[in-house]
Amino acid sequence: MVEVAHKEFLRSLVIVHVQTRMLTGGAEENTWASCVHQAGRGHIVHLVCGRDSNVDYYQSRNTSVRIHYVPELIREVSWRHDLAAYRRLTALFGDLQADIVHTHTSKAGAVGRFAARNAGVPAVVHGVHMLPFSNVGLAEKCVYLLAEHAVAPLTDHFVHVSHGTRRAYGHARIGSGRPHSVVRSGMDIERFRGSEWPQDWRQVMGVGPVAPKPRAILMLAALEKRKRHAEFIEGFMQELREGEDTRLLLAGDGPEAASIRELVASLGIADRVRLLGHRTDPERLVALADVCVLSSLREGLPRVIVQSLAGGRPAVVSPVRGIEEVVDCGVNGMIVRRSDAASIAREALKLVRDDDRLAAMTRAAQHAPVDEWTFAAMFEQLDRAYAAVLSAPRVRARLQRLQAEGLRASHAEYV
Image 1 (cartoon, helix red, strand yellow):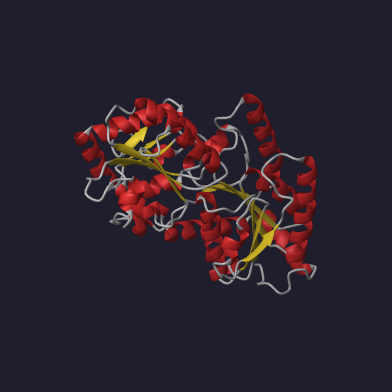
Image 2 (cartoon, one colour; image 1 turned 120 degrees about the vertical axis):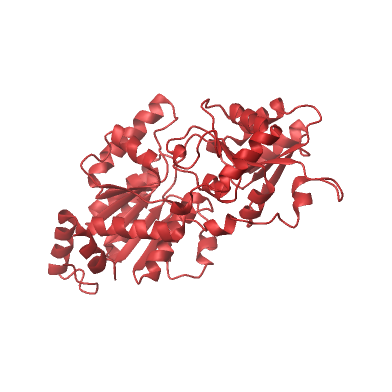
């Protein structure tokens, strides 16, 4: 039945993606790639994003994806803003005659799903990019769980970036009785395989014109609190031995950029901790690194770790759910069981000091099975998930009712 639906439904749909913010991180690039893919298949695709979004960046990419800026949609809980965003989204979904609303992230997921049901949208999909109720305080966890349980009945299909998040939703009984799919986060894997160092590598690492390359630990991550850069930096400096020529490269930008710069300046460690800002050549930075790290605890399945392994570099990471799907602990990287960022820094430094262990993990990383994370694989998985959504009896009934009422006459017929 799904195969028939795949042929009949996946054309001439109005699809609306909703994300709280669109910057340049992994979840945002994942959502954008999905939008572009669906628009390329002939669908009418809209992207709705909230206040903290780089709208100009995505509009400048000149695709047929139509972008809508909703400043009332913010990350923080605000009854005034949330109610305003709900009303705005309800009206927008109705005006666009959305066939499918696909929400991403927690706030857009809650407000967007309520608005979609109020607007009578036939199919509602929610993308789980990370676990909002994981590794947070008890009160915050309870709030997130209550919110997720409240909107789960409004959801026709859940799409997860990893089996780990899918299992976590199952354990929490979120969306019981609703279908859940795993759709890997797609990326240009070949871009990272066999890449060369950046031409400005000496400037990147802060070394002179004839000095040899020092060992390098790389963190590719937006500069925001949940990534725990400050704690990692402090742990790195505590563990760094006197005279040890190792660099910590931090590539990314974000709301914590100023405070991290102040921390590095106050500690007088700019020669060891290099703040690179946003770079358009992450594959070259991975090639330059000896080890890649990520110290955040709230993730889905981090794209940057997949990219690190695709570039043949072992990864040292926090114990986030599902990370074992790509990091084989002790083989192509390390999953640090202690959750503090300093422990991750300690293990990364131990690895770069051990030539034999580093060489073995590097060889293993070069053969890591990362083909599941290609764009082609993601698009195929996403198309199948949508086919499953649209073949569900309750969704088919809604679509047929709207067609009978003449509200979807300009779109493809639904069988």
